Image 1 (spheres, rainbow, N blue to C red):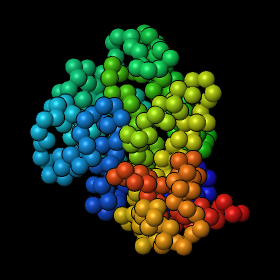
Image 2 (image 1 turned 60 degrees about the vertical axis):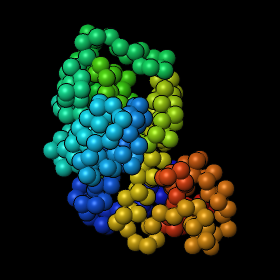
Image 3 (image 1 turned 90 degrees about the vertical axis):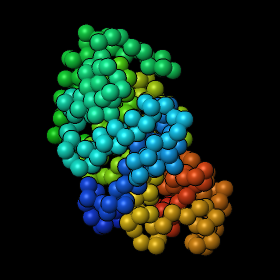
Image 4 (image 1 turned 180 degrees about the vertical axis):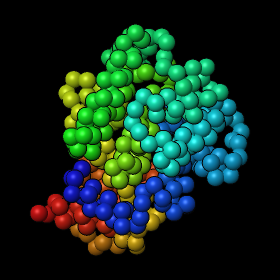
Length: 299
């Protein structure tokens, strides 16, 4: 994803006000999407509609595991702490607090570092043994402070921080969800919105993390840029102008008068060049995204 496109979308978002104080409806929609996405990629069975019902109305969903319902309610609470700034640092203390909020009453060791050696399902790489955890976490925390002091690129820094945490895998369960909340702290602290990582992103997300072990951070950094573009479109749809409204690719083609075919637009979204987001099994983009893509692509 071209950084100029990201920066321009972000400017439009910041023109609407503080990212920690969005309108209530906009904030709620972001909390719902983020909660659903981060839980669903870990196997939580609730659909987006069901998560909406649980969070908006406080209703239970029949025939769903109690754990899935508790994870939804408690992850939403943890995310609210992040957005409000009550938990605002990327460090060991924040990780423990977030884990405790999400998994209180679910895991016996909620809010505690793991006491056993673990493996990452589907990964070729094994997390460090338990006796190395604390020293590695201290190094991870200090490395993040150093990157902050050097004012390194926000996406490269996010990739290094997130990969470092996930490779240590400090909890017996819930590492991904805590790690993605730490990502959101990082982005909010740098005036970027919540980053939504949704079920359809799971394969690319895991591939990017696996690639980081051998090939460095490039794939993970690019993955975060692409998903941030999607997240910006989602937010701008709620707070932006008519040009920021999310449209299906057919609608976007008609409204823009572009020569791009819908097939071409879908291809460019999949390639991470045109900002887009997939909702209700349809690719969507905006007139602003198409305009920025044409402007940058045509230079």
